[in-house]
Length: 151
Image (cartoon, rainbow, N blue to C red; front, top):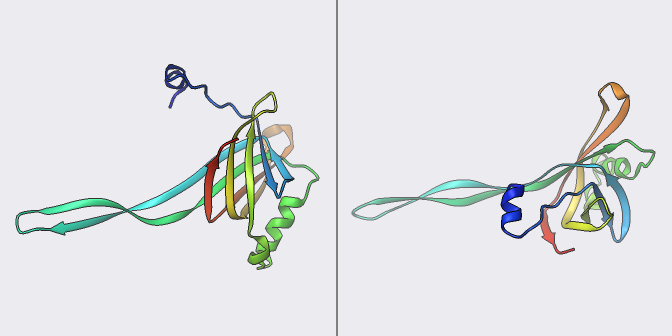
């Protein structure tokens, strides 16, 4: 819903500026940008036939595992890299961790929270942010289930 629609509905738009991953109350990493949260279900066609007509319905099919992609200036913190290394080394049982993604506004108040069940860092990307020379770290996490919870 665009900002004007949110205002008309009596709701205020969320404007987060900080995104934190926590596991068991321990802050693992803080990010400056949420690239995306994605959860999808494929659509399949189902037909049923009667003597007089054929009915085509769209039904939910295979579920795509949810992903969360976050970005930050690279820091000396290696906890996300170490977590990703568990996946690379094939220890997926140790890598699967349930965690929370909390979004904070400029005042430091939480404005949204998601719980990720059995999450693990699927992809780590390091790159330069234009001519500034700042290293940027982009982490894509996948999980078995993602749920928005109240803050």
